[in-house]
Length: 171
Ligand SMILES: [Fe+2]
Ligand SMILES: [Fe+2]
Image 1 (spheres, rainbow, N blue to C red):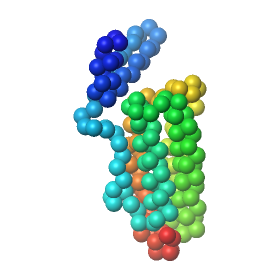
Image 2: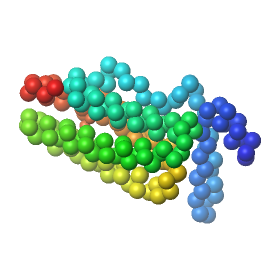
Image 3: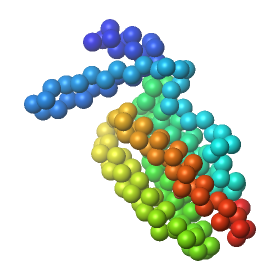
């Protein structure tokens, strides 16, 4: 096993071990298909065009990329819990910021949008609460779920409100 681990690590891959009582142990090996898989690049496509919000989204992506570096073994595991706490605090602040703007401008889809935030935060908090050991990490599936949700949310639900907020002079 240690030889396999070394080979995977030398290819900048990840090993994950899942043990379940009476079911046995599963070894997951993930190898990168490019230099840094999962790295979220900020592109113009992500910009909603409201600088305060774009700045907050950029911070989300940056924290997710830091977490990804920990997952890839590029950063100390000890950094993971600080990153997750920062990310959670930032998400709470950011969602609140959007929701206040929705109320101020009477955004018609504010309730549906808030429900998306609440459902995601519930999952995110459940994930971080489960990680009691400060050197423990989320699973690869959990990290992927968070990354995909945020990227999709910015590109779809958040882009939807941009024109409405801009009509009210929100910048
Ligand atoms: Fe957002
Ligand atoms: Fe949002």
